[in-house]
Image (tube, rainbow, N blue to C red):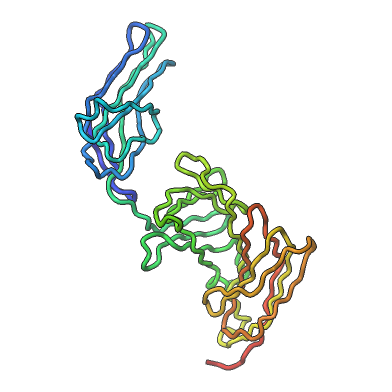
Length: 336
């Protein structure tokens, strides 16, 4: 038996290997049982999570079933209850049971064909879990960068560069910040998934996976892949760059905003930002009717060197259709 450890962002990952096994069911039919010694994996109360249960075997068309049990002390293992487990599954023992025992049952209905068991590994993690790690990904020509800002103990911001850049000068303004709390990215079957670094509702590490850029619905999955939160609307965003109106040194009075859109179920919110400041609500784009609509919103004299617009929507299974957006501004030709 061996104990091996390695350290990563999740803490220290340990493996207890019962590598001196050679159990078979030969030469008669029926079952044979291998039971490990009661083993103290040495983690005491420092286990932060159990890992995968692994087994190496040659089945030859027959079966091996596995069970595991644990206790807080060696004397308590005998009275503990075995739990079924399969190789590849996460161990379900409590975090305060470092004394474990494993049972394997080898079965065959043919006398000269027997399964063979050669190794069992028990994995677990000790130490704290970090929710801070800079990570990035390019997905469908979008660049996403997740990071932790000063004063945060978890990743709290994602910078997103959109698919297209219309002019070279736009390069300085294309990364848009979103307050998504994401620790990791993964692409599977042409879908982008992310691991959550923090949950506002419980102020803890969420430990869940979300599917990004699905367009209409936020599906959150537990570690077993089962949806635990469904039908949660995703915020849809339509956001411009910081517009200088080709007069970067001068202030401009933002006078009107024109929006060309098609109403859908659920209202949309029009917001503005001046000189890189926080977004301020300007108007609600209502969902009345189904025909393409052109709406002009008067803002009358908001002064700034740059102006940025954003339209958001949060309705399950409803898209946002924006055909165009324009700002009408009056330049103040005064050099500062």
